[in-house]
Image 1 (cartoon, helix red, strand yellow):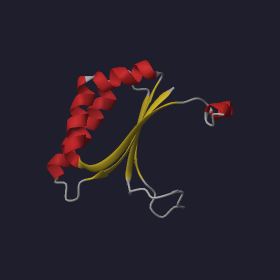
Image 2 (cartoon, helix red, strand yellow; image 1 turned 60 degrees about the vertical axis):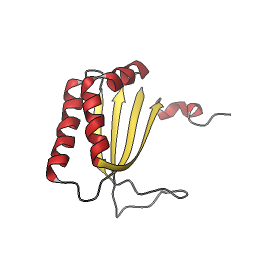
Image 3 (spheres, rainbow, N blue to C red; image 1 turned 90 degrees about the vertical axis):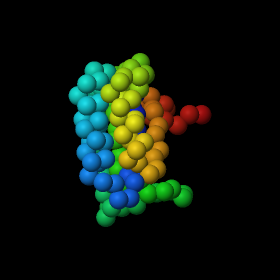
Image 4 (cartoon, helix red, strand yellow; image 1 turned 30 degrees about the vertical axis):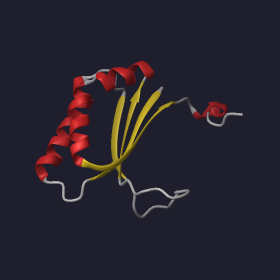
Length: 115
């Protein structure tokens, strides 16, 4: 399984038109890109426990996109709906971190911590 993980902070004062274009592009990517297995978006729980280690900027939003494999991620990244989402993301976001992961069930813990 492969995950595309996006942590982001919207631009301050983002107008409703830009916000709606971003949301529409996100919905289109979820709907139109067949390689997507699951697509979550969420807001950080601000009053929950703090797990931060070291200095990190605040990213109040996250998106996690799940694929069967790396080939699915590659299809997603090249798809016109993702390219459109990327344009709206760039116009709407002040700061972000984006990472891709190959993942296995936690029962295969040796994958997580290499020797």
